[in-house]
Image 1 (tube, rainbow, N blue to C red):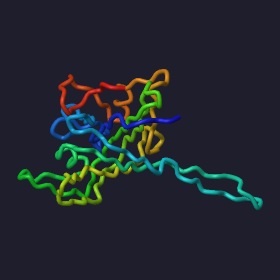
Image 2: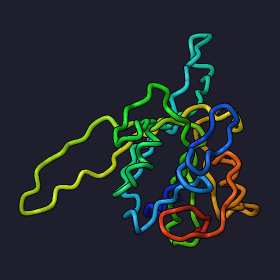
Image 3: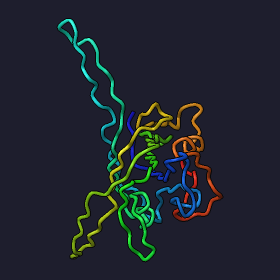
Length: 210
């Protein structure tokens, strides 16, 4: 099926020991879930690659007799237009010194990510979900302003990793048009048992939109 647009992205920090979403000061928001939003200028793009890997060919009797399938561990090259500084630092694993300085940790945090798109008729959403992965920022191309403003958006790479609940695959796709789909259940599954807090507006969390 054809999909159109990038409706929203969802991020959460997951406790490696418990598999639960981190909340409050340890997480990204009060209840742990950060959703892209107009205040933060939203998500510009998400290029998902390595969705399927070529299998290993097996030969016998002078012919190709089998292909051993490989697990899927996609990468997402995503661009957020204006992630809050602290959100970006946390998902990259940068540690604050309490005086305004941030240093990259060698132990990258576990990050859960969902990219939401829509069907061509805009009747329902398609969600590309990643329950376990790491976020890196490989480069910043900072340039002087001239007659126009030269922005450097938040271009980050997400590497999915094995997620035990999904037979150690890296990605799961959810179709909101399927009978039985429940967005709350999906967020709970992907985001380490996430439970929404009372709506607070702004750049926080919530489960509105589908």
